[in-house]
Image (cartoon, rainbow, N blue to C red; front, side, top):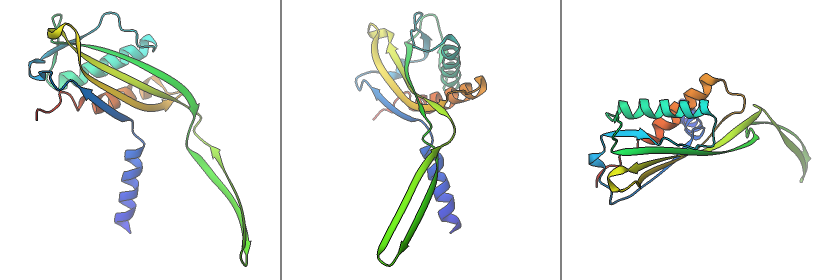
Amino acid sequence: MKLLLILLFSILLVSCGASVAVDYDKEADFTHFKSYNFYNDIDSGLNDLDDKRIMKAIDSTLQTQGFSKSEIPDFLINFYASETLSNSRNTIGIGLGSGGGNVGVGVSGGIPIGGKVINQLLTIDLIDTSKGEELAWQAMIDGEMKEKATPQQQQTYYYKVIAQALKKFPPSAK
């Protein structure tokens, strides 16, 4: 029983995270990628504060992986996002039921809790500068955060999802 509860709780935690899809050019040589920089004219569709949070999270993650920021980079980074606002999918269920014999009647409903959430699709492109700025690797992060998230909560969210995405970079050679 205890094992079942632990398993159920683990599944719940995993299901609440952002989903990450990665695509890359199978012909690209990622072994020469040592340095990076950002495009000068990133138009992410987000505000400047979120742009800075994303850049800091990417910087931190890539530098932890051994890459260095350079004025003459091996690859350039671009990112952009699309956002929609929706009600939280978390609800409290209330149900009434009655039945006797072979007849049953039931009524149920869900009351939304948690307020509105921002559904965000964040795309990160890594462009190979040795091939004339050709797309080499791309991550698409589909996640959500509270509409009224604090700056600290937003920063934590970006660090978490970007680390999750860049864990898959560079792709393993097969």
